[in-house]
Length: 264
Image (cartoon, rainbow, N blue to C red; front, top):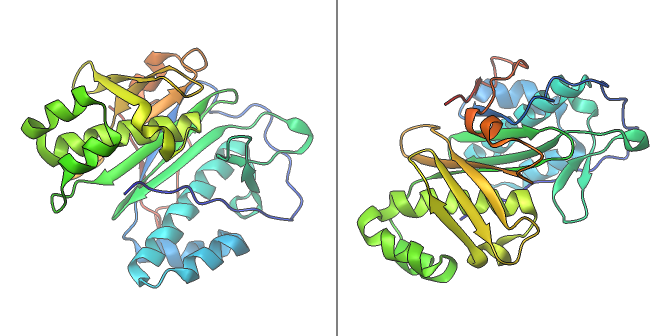
């Protein structure tokens, strides 16, 4: 159901990062159109060996192309923000298993998260010291969403879904998954997450077990037929106003990748 993080490691020397990156003001999100064949063809050289292996392991050529374009976009965005060639970025995992950038000498680096579903991907970046999670899902009607909700959702959330249908299910799912990706709780922690909607664009996520018991959610308008959400943690690290505005970014992605800044 949810989009899994793909992590790449590299034995190459980690290049020096730009000391004063332009992401310091808050969270930024890029929306990436994945059905652009040129993005996969031109970007293949930017991927690590591990990323290429993962791509080649995908039997469906459409899914393979989408994987490549999504990861090329991620590398291009992070490389532009850090002042490092995209193909020289090195990735690892933090203490909770989340993907992270590797940096020499403990230099602060931005946090990031990638999610993709069918034809769209989202790349979210947060300043050092913050955590960010993002999720996008294509709304699908061909499954028992109420049964799935009974397994993962709180009773008060399940009670709302008969009137809201699949749209409501995926709206909550993206908020929950963005939260567990930001917190590092993993899918096992999803059943402890409660989403309290405040408006059509905002909510609060509460958790009894995760490191961050309360975080703000921003729902994102990606494309018709898709649900998406953004969470930053801890709340003190990224002011809620920054999360709400999804700050416009200054780093472009090549036109072959077809990315745009996602704004309210």
